[in-house]
Length: 327
Ligand code: TRP
Ligand code: SF4
Image (cartoon, rainbow, N blue to C red; front, side):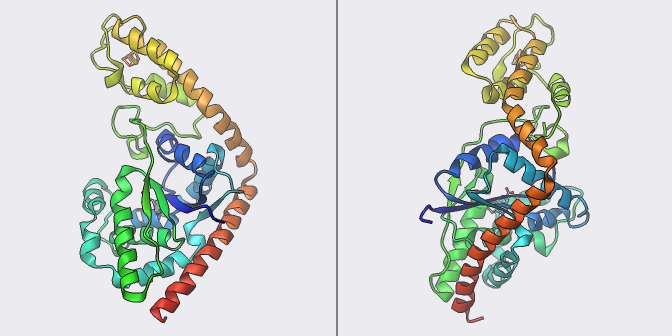
């Protein structure tokens, strides 16, 4: 296989929503044409924040895998697998922990940020500090050339590169420094205008039924300047307008822009148009999702097969790592 290799991952901590679709999956799917892809459901990373309540992780693993496949990840071309199914990640993480300076981990910007933002979990743990090092192990174990991620993960990729360099400095050139493959992520706020997040209850899940999606869209926040039907608005400051920009074509966009600014259309009308267009996008995904839900054994088989392929690649690197470290 001479295609360059990439790896990316997602934490199974909830149902996937539109943010995951347009922010990750829509980018991951076409990458399958150009790269040897490894897509990993990182359940150990889920434990770094959800260690005190693990009963939901198993369900989310299968649910997320179904969404991945429904959105177009193709097990014939990509290794789709669960992190804990390839225990080599843990071994590399352990070995890397020996050479990872604490200061490097403490200075990763997401560490302090998340510590402040995530309430309800005590994150003063060894596992949470080591989160980006475990991520480095995920990537380095496949000698991935690139990692498709959003802007928020760049610091983790930089740490991964530094760790690879440090390893190679001590033990010889084994690990490969990966590039961040920055994927374009359209602006898609939550339905209330805040950041889309399951914990804010402002997300549309990929598995939501059309009736539920319609209800959610009806309650979406709009431009606050449009108090009454005849008040003109601005789709650039309206979450519904943001969604149209992602899910509607140029004709509808012109209709929204003109109609909103002139108070020629009402918000309900505008939202129902969005619902129609969003449905067009989600329908095929939802159909595949339903099909896969009635064949969960096949999904488990796909994950097993992905783990087998991943284990073979990870095993090769680990043999080199152990030899280089004389362990
Ligand atoms: N930290 C990533 C996120 O929150 C998830 C992740 C874990 C990951 N391991 C990875 C992403 C390896 C890319 C490569 O999105
Ligand atoms: Fe938002 Fe549409 Fe209402 Fe304008 S018409 S404020 S874009 S919902």
